[in-house]
Image (cartoon, rainbow, N blue to C red; front, side, top):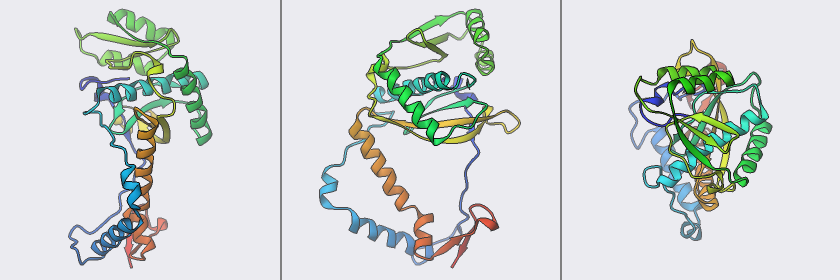
Length: 269
């Protein structure tokens, strides 16, 4: 995985997304304004007072260095798990992001929901082993030798993109798996709670964000310091999905989306 600004230049870009076409000028009396007003009232009614007292304050990568390390290490553990279950899968990059982590894979078979469950189980096994995560500085030639021995073409390309004279580091999980990486990470896999992470979805991405390059599979995950934080985050996401303006707008008969006319196109009622 890659972690600093110079090494993240190779980050892929997801290409599975649609954005609803909404008129630019809308005010509180417009259809969209009424929709949000109605949604706000519904939200206020449905939130029970006792639930507010149970809310957990969620840290961010900026406020918690430990959380950032957990998420970055989860990306590595996931990549290790994937390559254990899918030996033909090649790894590319796997950074932390604002609410979790992801890793891009070149795998000959599409990942399914069932695969994600199995990958999560394998990750839990790795976490329970409490394997040390260690950093090693290597010469460029040594890194190239190790990468070629694994046949990892993407990592070779990443290595070639690291400027001459810049320190090259490898992070290993026990003696079972390693990755070109600038860090940081937790000290061992056991520092991560197996009940505080979840694999969320699979999306498409192009290598280095270029549609002319190979199409990869990106697995997204979220990770937190505690199981309570994860539950709070999941509840927040469920509430956000339930109040999604695209969903509410159709339920309130304000607009409709007709896929036959084009993905994301809105027809105001």
